[in-house]
Length: 137
Image (cartoon, rainbow, N blue to C red; front, side):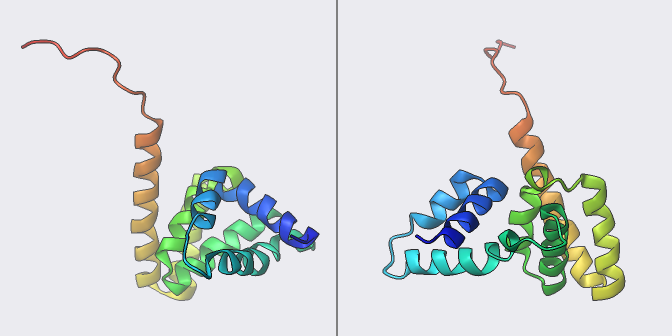
């Protein structure tokens, strides 16, 4: 693996988590590894190229573009990673208004629904487990 691809994978893991990247790389079809390398080089290589945009800025752009294009699976993936990218809930809420204004209400409504799912999952995952035994009524 060359240095650029290695840096792209490192950032992808930092943003999306090891579990997600490992699951993607674990696919067993014949083209899976080449495809993951291609996606990582293309999509994450641009994040590692430097330039005037921070990773937080790039994250906001990805969220806006995936919402605008109706790519809700990818939108949810990146919305789930917002804590790692430095994007706040308030910023993500505001992004929906921008999407509505420039891309249309249907795109923003779909993104809002997807965001609701992400936040519900996050709340469920953060809830403490019930460690007390059930009582007889």
